Amino acid sequence: MTASSIIEYIDRYDGDVRDRLLTVYELIKSAVPDEAVESISWRMPTFKLGTEPLFFFTGTKRHIGF
Image (tube, rainbow, N blue to C red; front, top):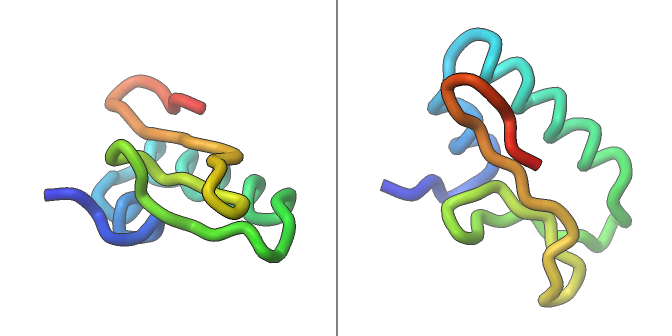
């Protein structure tokens, strides 16, 4: 089942991976313009500006993709 929000996506992980995803999320959120929109796209947390994606990130067992 696909997450409906970035926080829901992150909450599916445990331990270090969850902590790292939260760090990436907070860093991106602090850097994007206020009008950027959070979404899930291609089953990954995404920040968009208008219809254009700015950042995608994802978690796996052994690494974080950005």
